[in-house]
Length: 78
Image (tube, helix red, strand yellow):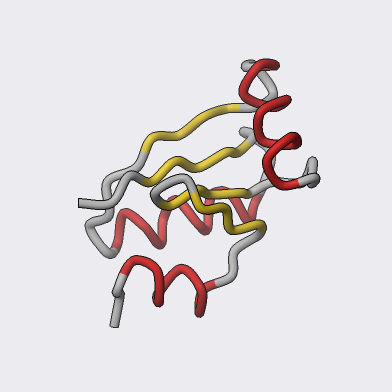
């Protein structure tokens, strides 16, 4: 099973779309609200160099934005 972490904010529409997509495909994930967790926000920026959300890490490999093709490939969603 792959470890999936989503970095998001409550006001981000693409974050909501990403989380909905994962739920629709029965992918379990941990949601981290970077507007409330400054340490997680710093870790996210340190790892990717990007402040924008959504970001997701699959087995600690980052995907910035809602890159459906990359997400499908890494999570083996058909």
